[in-house]
Length: 112
Image (cartoon, rainbow, N blue to C red):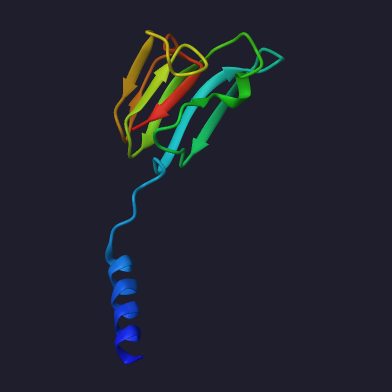
């Protein structure tokens, strides 16, 4: 019984020392978009998931684009002109301060 207890304790201790895989790009990703009253609004993704295509939620059902992205996460953000991160029109924003102008349009983003 003592050997089993020590073995289980050892396995638990080992699992606690293995670093967890990061599943989020820590920080904020901001962008601008026009609302239904044609006023500029600021959107934000906080700690977005890594490796998943994210459609910009505020414009998902409209035929408009977001613009002026700013990447204040710890991961590279790749912005796309389409909804599913698959177009040939994309741009990479570096971690911690990468930004685009009003001319950089986007509808989706993926963090790596």
